[in-house]
Length: 423
Length: 146
Image (cartoon, rainbow over all chains, first blue to last red; front, side):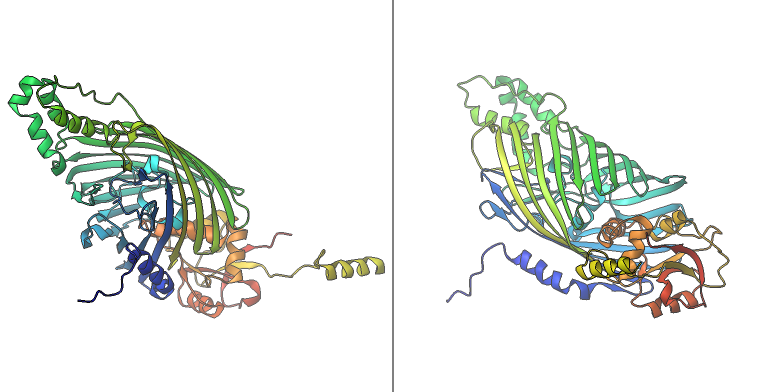
């Protein structure tokens, strides 16, 4: 049977996004109570060398073609807002992007009803965003922020993108700006992507958090936190944990039972804390955040992370520099080798890999330029240079068998177009 | 005096000294029956940036915008808050796509702006003074920087 035409693998999504970009002005629609808005990004990134490929988040699948990817940051978003009454409106936002596992449920970023009984009070119910970081709830809206991508050291480990639940916010009208306090709670099902292309949906319960946001024409000050409990076990670790719990193994390797207990994902907690500041005045843009991630799951060490960005506008051009870092906030779990001669080396190697593969310890300096081509279209170029410490490549797809993963440097060159329609 | 005029004319021809493009002020307008008499710059900014949804008397304020690429829109936001339309769009992209607020409704022409103001006493809009009719009430005036 003759084969049909062969298209280069990996071009489908960028082509769809490019076509939809051209159609986006027609898609945007604005009637008295109904608004259809779109946003998107078309991106290209090239990595040097090719044995450590940045993943930018635990939900990001391995979608590199050699050292290059069109898919990692490319996406298309569509939002429908409908004003149902003078105090109630409904919002649905869909995001089309490359995921480890695509489904309508994963594509629905937000879907909620908002009730504003007074000028200052808003209550939302449905699928919402947990804004525990300053940009956590618009990380996919590239046109709304300066850089090609959010600092990986800060936003990469933030795996909870949305939750099903409720939030309440109240705005205090102060002399020099508005202060908004927000409480939120619900359940979340974030997706984890493995390097082999498989995906797992986590079941996270009892998510709750709060944020304070002060904002005026020039300043934005932010404080946020969130905590969530894992309510599922990782399928990928189950065989390993069963082997570590084997009484025969315990008798030879006493630490194995303790390691198995520490590797239980179910019932472990994650907590995110952050402080952020942003200044935008007289063409200077300065922004930074510091954060702490507490992981109750021992294979993933808790971390401190931070970034600082400085930029200057020159008409439609804005060059910028970003410094970002993430490092473990405590010692990583020590895995003592078992006695030799019992054939437990493979089990030890898998256990060592579990406790050392997910940690992140690196620093990045980024240089970039944003050019506003049009009032709703921006071109961005960015170069990232990252120094990764030994076994600190948890936010990278590791294409080498060398363990522990040695310290290394990675360069990423990125280019993107981002846009919004319907404003 | 004659020498000065000649010099200015010469420099104008070279593009060094423009006699000055006369641009009318931009005025912020509401329905004549709306009881609000005046707003401060801060109050106008808060309403058009989505931070305030009511007039000082508690009545609902519905801001409307001029066409996306109209010169009056660019001048309005530059003079009001010192930001370009691209910056304003980035600001609204953050609020709209996080479900926090919706930007002012966009109208395509001065006629549409005037009609909307005259048909709804909650609407607040802006227009070049040259395009103004005396049917609406002016509550704030933005003047071109000298």
